Figure 1 (spheres, rainbow, N blue to C red):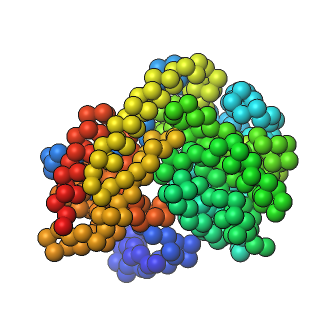
Figure 2 (tube, rainbow, N blue to C red):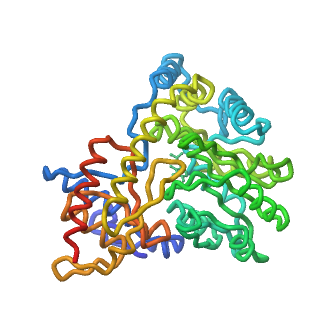
Figure 3 (cartoon, rainbow, N blue to C red):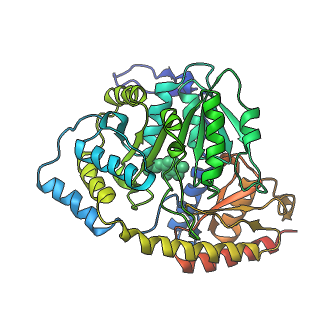
Length: 413
Ligand SMILES: *Cc1c(COP(=O)(O)O)cnc(C)c1O
């Protein structure tokens, strides 16, 4: 990839700077393209309803904000230890004990600038050229890119809607070879909302153990589960499984703190030490103020989450029922997170004004142009027969937005 830059020295010719080979194959995000289009149309005054949100629409709870303000007033605004302040590490250790029955020490925990940053540091710490990472699809868009950026090779395992978007033991086993370094489990999942039961996790863990594969478990949506479903951590299957697991979590989704940028990882000392070294030479510590707010989020009252979860559960039901009432569209009721992954395969091949809707991106573009509705195409998540809709938006938007999607799909012949 080349990019033209102009030298600042007067009279000098523009030079061409060759960008790094690392960028090869790094595609521009379809998701961002749709989001940009929605923003532009909104700015023109168009009535746009967005189902693209990847974050809760609730405000950060008051007690957490106040802890951040107090940190500023108390002058806690300087560099901290690279891997996080002890107070936050202790809060995280307490959370793992309380919620997952997992015991960690401070040197087995790192705090990063968001969960995404922890995952990035992890891949940078464990992958060498040729190492494969098993990623069940549909997947969070960043996993394969981060694996590739670290020099590894993503090995995508397609799961089906019929199987609840969950990787079976046989599928897992069939994709293991001598290069397999790690597997990623994201439960509850973005984009499908699917969550593994404790029994399913136990079976997957057995195979990882038998093949000496590192388990990377992204539990960022752990608290956002419905119908009484309780999320469990695969690392808590046994001490042996814990020894080959890195648990990723953070405050972004649970406490509506996406902008504060605090995530964390817990796992074997050697891996956490390597991640801390990489962090020490790149970002250094996560924001000091946010760390103090996160202490309050994680160790403060947890019942502040109840109203948010109740509201998400209500919206989920309304959205799922309304989508299933549209001819050509169907979706499962997800166990967790705040997304619905809707099957649009029956709509593909239909036409509007001579134009055929060939894939999920075509449908997303059609919906934004003709109905003023922004959805995220399933293609970048690894399945082109689906679209992702977030219910982190008002009930009013859900009711009106899905009605408009239904009307628009009716127009397709
Ligand atoms: C949002 C998200 C994350 C991390 O978000 P941060 O804001 O970086 O903490 C990690 N994994 C998944 C699947 C997510 O959706």
